[in-house]
Image 1 (spheres, rainbow, N blue to C red):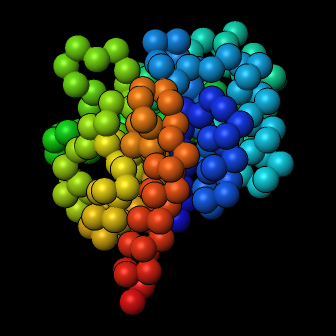
Image 2: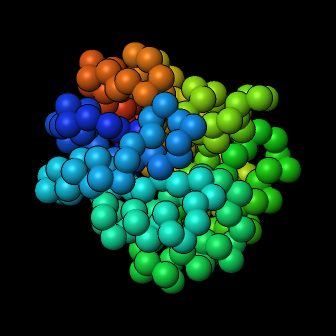
Image 3: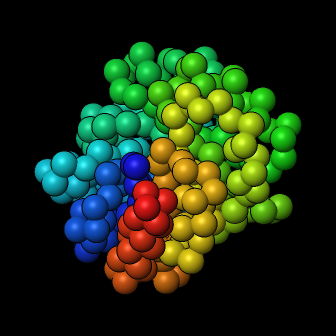
Length: 218
């Protein structure tokens, strides 16, 4: 199972994810987010994670080519994550422009939203299923909101995705048992305050994940 911790901004948090056994780290390039980091800062932290064998993900929201060029050239991420309203053609254009895999976030709250999966599943290299943001929120993700996991019962098992949205050490075990997702993505669920990663919560999260996986295998 791939486990991605997103919205990192310090060496300590990157090291905590490395030590706990994470596979991916994400850096947020959306200025309205409390998890926003500069490209230069993300490059430093990304290199630290890559040296330990983790994949690094650049998370953007409807970014233009100039910003993506800077991110690609300075941070040198392993993957681009598109968390805005990017249409399929934009996904394909970004893949071609940078030669990087692209993960596309899809917000789910009702069965009708599943139609978006068919639009993107053959275009993006991976999907990320997140909850729709609360009314009035300017953040497309990191809102500590979950969606109804039973929506995933209708999902084609061949779809590669990461499950996101309101996950934390208290409910991640239930998510694993219910949906058995191929990947998990967390941000606010390991924070003591918006944008402030908590080393203890990161450790508790991975303890809960490991326990749930042991129980599912037994």
